[in-house]
Each structure stands twice: as C-alpha cells, then as structure tokens.
Length: 154
Image 1 (cartoon, helix red, strand yellow):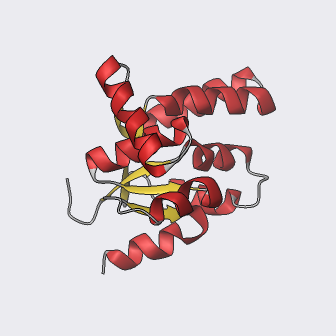
Image 2: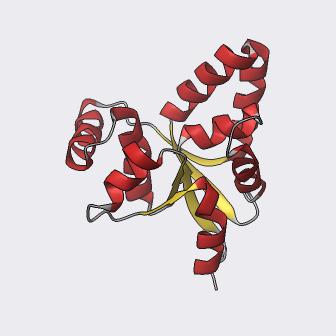
C-alpha cells in the first residue's frame, strides 16, 4: 500500500447521503467517495451492507439499492465480519464504553481494529461522544473530513 493512501472507515450515513444526493451534506459525502481508490482505501464492517441496502431500498427502491451495493463492493478494500459471539461481545463493550448506539460501535470498532480514520454525519450522538473519550481513532464529520485528512498528509 502506498504511504499517501489513507485508511478510512465510513459510517453508512456517509454512503447513504452520497447516494441520495439531496441531503444537507450529500455534496461533501460525494466528494469523499471521489477520493476512494485514489487517496483513501475503505475498511468497512459488514453491517454497512445491511444499512446501505435498507436505507436506499426504502427511499429509492430495490433496483437502486442493488446498484448502490454493487458500487459499494467495488470501493471497499476490506469488509470485516463481526459475526462471532466473541466479536459481537467486543463490539458491545465498545458501545458501552463510548455510550454510542450499537450500530455505530461496529464502525468505531472497525476504525480501531484497522487504524483507520472514521467519517460520520452523526455529530451529536456519535462523533462528540467518542471525541470526549480517549479513543485510538481519528474521527471527523463529513463536512470537515477532507480538509482535515488531507492536511494530515502534508
């Protein structure tokens, strides 16, 4: 892997916002995805598949959900499956430690395990909660992610 390539984990809300194209931060999310494969490689929990398919399917229909998944699979460098009992318990402990939702804990755990930068749209219930703790992960809101991550590379 090239040194200038950054490891990134995207909360599914970033992926969903990019596909929907009509949300407040959709343009930021689309711009982030434009860096995947060039400056970023994605490490994602398998939960991303379910969240992306469900959210896009509900709002844009199943054909669009299938297309979004096909595009997602092309972008992802590594999918981490936290399906074992031990892994699920470990993710549960992460959720409890940081007082975050269980689904968010999968993204944070992936970020911690693979030393990635984590990008989300959920400032109040996710980003702010983990930033107040001593977390071994760089966490950014999508609106700030590119400027902050690319600044770190200098």
